[in-house]
Amino acid sequence: MTIVSLIRANSYEKAALRQSIETLLKPLGGMAAIVKPGNRVLLKPNLLTGSRPTKECVTRPEIVSCVAEMVMEVGGKPFLGDSPAFGSARGVAFANGYQEIVERLNLTIVEFHGKRYPTNATEFNHLRLSKEAMEADVVINLPKVKSHVQLTVTMGVKNLFGCVPGKMKAWWHLEAGKDVNRFGEMLVETARAISPNLTLVDGIIGHEGNGPSGGEPRLLGLLAASENVFACDRALLEILNVSPELVPTAAASLRLGVCPELAEIQFPLLKPVDLKIEDWKLPEALVPIDFGMPRVLKSTFRHLYIRFIKEPIKLYANR
Image 1 (spheres, rainbow, N blue to C red):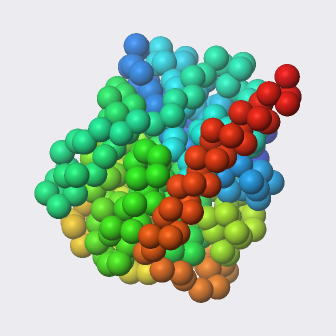
Image 2: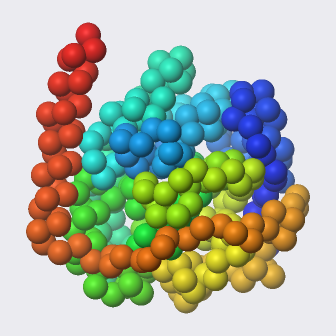
């Protein structure tokens, strides 16, 4: 039976957070059951943007720091990686307070590079995925609970779309975004191909309303973890009181048979009903997933400008 571990957690303070994550992972066997000595471990946070560092748009660095330390303690070799929509992983991470943990723990931040890997759905075999993610010994997925103006809610499955490198994500919006069901299936197949060993969700403070970046912070006071990313998302939707049919990734995971029904999920600690949120704010209105060609080109130009001009100039100015 699939296990989803749920706990209350209200603090990012180091000692309290460490205790919370240890409690969270205990039903899964602890970090030692996930990471073996010598494993190269990709930590995949949500590094969406550097433009709103106070609005809880990204996974908190405190979460990443705590997980990285626990990986090191069992002999693993953690590194960070993501492919932000705008700018570099390093630039977005540093804009959101990651510099201290990166330097203290000597963590490498990798920029994802694409390679074709086979998927379970032949129509998505041309999907380019990050070789850094696919070739890691262990992948720990560290998403944030957020509302999303295109996908209603974004958590573990959508966070793995960051393993599609560079502006390929925008092209997938153009190619698959005309059919919301197909787009959801593409995200599910991406998550299934990457197959994270652990998904640990930052739900202490979420981001509600017009997310993934245009909303506002919201205290949720919870952490979730599972070896099954689809089950983890399903449990969180139950907590947020959001029907899976409203979320393309959740609907696709159920349709494709990769997500267990709620009754088939074991909750060894708290159950979704114990953490129920009745007034979580969804987007005021959904916007189309489809990116038209002009938007793709504009997005690509903006990404290249931030990554290769704006970020280097800022770095030079700070010397």
